[in-house]
Length: 574
Image (cartoon, rainbow, N blue to C red; front, side):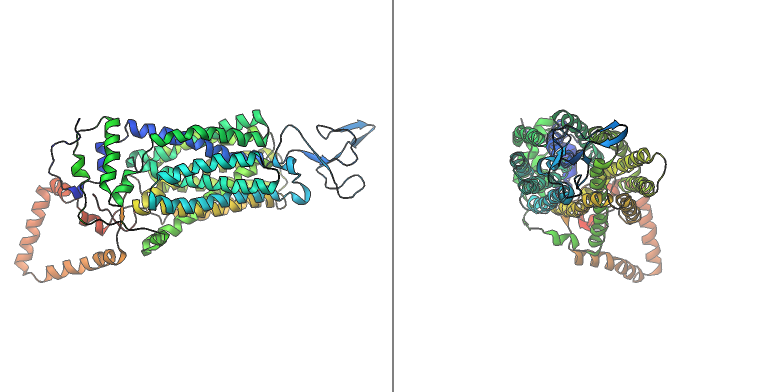
C-alpha cells in the first residue's frame, strides 16, 4: 500500500500540520482511541488528588481521658439532666487539663485519626495538602521544560511511574512526615501528567474538536466514581493502594500513544514525524495524500532549544502570559479552596463530594457548546461571574447569623463550584491555542505553576475559614471579579489553527512598523494619472479574482505580519 498520491502542485510551505491532520481524517479512529486512553489514564490522577479530600478529613473526635470503655461515638445520655459522656472535640479533659488520648469515630479512618492530628496538630492536614500541591508545581515546571526539549511522551509516562510508586509508599507510611514526603512526589507525578496530557491530545486534533478533548467531563465522572469507592472502603491506606493498582495497566498505553508529530515538525525532524503520520493514516484509513511532499526535509535545519524566557520575548507575549497567569491563579485558589471546603460543609462528606462532582458533568457539557458558540474568552467570563456571585453570597451567609445557614452555604458553594469547574476547560483551551508548538508545553507548564501557587493557598484558606468565617469565599469572589476584567484584554482563539514557531520580535516589529511608511512612499512617488490607473487596475483584479487570490496568497509572509487570536508568532509550515 502506498501513501503517496499525485502531487497537487501546492508548495510545501503551504502544507501546515493542521492540513496534515485534516488529510489524516480530522477526528478519526486514531484520535478517538487516543483520547479515550488518555482520559482513562487520568482516572489515577483524579483518584490521587480527590483522595486527599477524604484522606485528610477530620472525623468526629473526643477526649478519651477518663473514659473507661472503648466507645465508637461520643453520645450524650439523659439522667434528669443532660450529661456529656465524653468531651467532644475538646482539647481539655474533665479536669480542665491537656488531653492526652483521643477517640475517633470509626466510620472513617484518615491520617487525622491515625496520627492524632487534632488540637495543636490540627494545622498539619492542610500543610500536607499544600506540600502535595507544591509537588504538582515542581512537576509542572519540570514537565513543561522536558516536554518541549525531549517530546511529550517521556514526561507523560514518567507521571504514571511516580503515581504508582509513591501511592505505594503512602500506603506503608508510619508517620505523617513520611506520608507528606510521599504526597510531594505523588503531586509531582500529577503535575507531569496534567502538563502534557492536553498538549499531546490537542496536537493531533483540529480546532473544532479541541474543546471536546479538553472539556470532556472525565474528571467529574471519575470524581463521582471515587466518592462511591471511597464510601465503600472507608480507609485512607486502602484508597492509596487501590489507586496504585489501577496505575499498573496504564503502562500498556506506551504501545498505542505516539510522540507528537507536531513536536517533530517544529524541531525540524520530518523523518520521525513521517513514521507517526503514516501509522495514523493507516489506522484512520486515509492514505491517499502525498506524505513525502507534506513532510519535505528542510534545507537548513534548526533545532533550537526553547526555555521559559521565550514566553517573555515580546511585549505582547509578556502581556498575555501575565493575564493568563492571573486566571490560572484564580483556578487554583477557588478550585482547591472549594474542594477542601467540602470537609466543613454540613452532611455526609461522601455524598457532598459526589454531589459536587456530579454537577460538574452537565457544566462541562454546557461549556463545550458555549466555547464553540461564543468563544473561549466569553465562556470564561461567564464562568468567573457565577463564581464571584456564589462566593460572595456564601461569604455573607457565613459571616451573618441567618436562617437556614447550612443549606444556603451548600447551595451557593455548589453554584461557585459549578462555575469554576466549567472555567477550567475554557482557560486551558485558550492557553493551548495561544502558544506555538515550540513553547506550548513550557507555556502550559509555567501557567500551571501559577495555578498551583494558588492551589497551595486554597487549603490554607480552608483552615483559616474555621477561625474567620466567610474568608475563603470572599477571597474566591474577589479574585473571580478580577479575572472577569482581565479576560477582556486577552485574545479570542476560537476556530484558530495551532501555530508552530516563534517570530523574532525585532523582525516582527520592524515589519509591522515599516510597512505603512513603505506603502505611503511608493504611492507618493507615482504621477497622479498613473496612481489613479494603478488603483483602478488593482480594484478590478480584486473584484474579479477575490476568491482565487485569497487562496493563492495564504502564504508565510501574511502570517508573519499578524496572526489573529494568537501571539506575535511565525507559522512556518513544513
